[in-house]
Length: 104
Image (cartoon, rainbow, N blue to C red; front, side, top):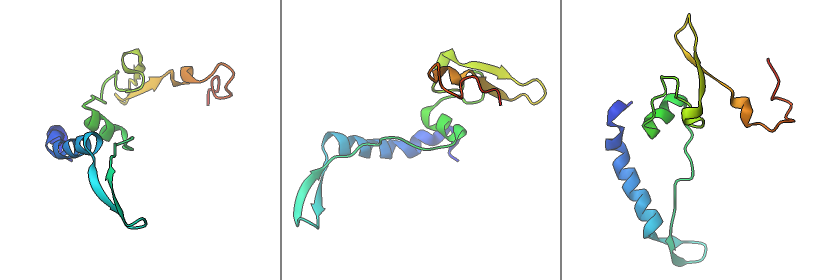
């Protein structure tokens, strides 16, 4: 776990992704026996919440930890565990959605 030094690991990856997107790289297609210019991008990442926080440089240990809600987060610090929980995510569902009023 690189902690605050994750940028050391990410710099090379970001440089290569920029090159793949902007210039592309010459790639051999064996099925067509031809060479073409390949371009690529990183579409998304899948990570746990602390990993997402490190990747984004986002503090996931406070009341504004939700990257989707950002400063509109409705958070609550649980008094006996000192953990943050995030309320109100059902507001993104349509009015008639069956999970919107589900309390369980």
